[in-house]
Length: 134
Image (cartoon, rainbow, N blue to C red; front, side, top):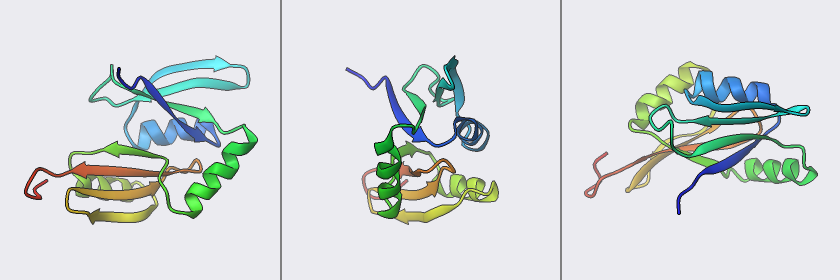
């Protein structure tokens, strides 16, 4: 068994498309009109055949309440792995991304949390090798 897709609920698919592709650097895998919305998925350019992230409209009434509660509690909705968190933090900050948590070293991993402009907090994480090295 493997992860095929997982979703992030977004309040604006056009803005999500721009942020996740132009700012974060993901690539569009599917962009299919479905009524007033789109079946919109992105993938990592490092793993174009890997898991897809679905940028889903947050139309369900529970979605907005759930997302607001997660943001209020500072809980990221998704986590993305990076090779060099310091470099990614600097790159994204220079691109205007708002971080709610700068990189923090937790011993086995370094994490940072940012706002995806679509109602979610997203974590990026750099794992560390045994002995604490990145």
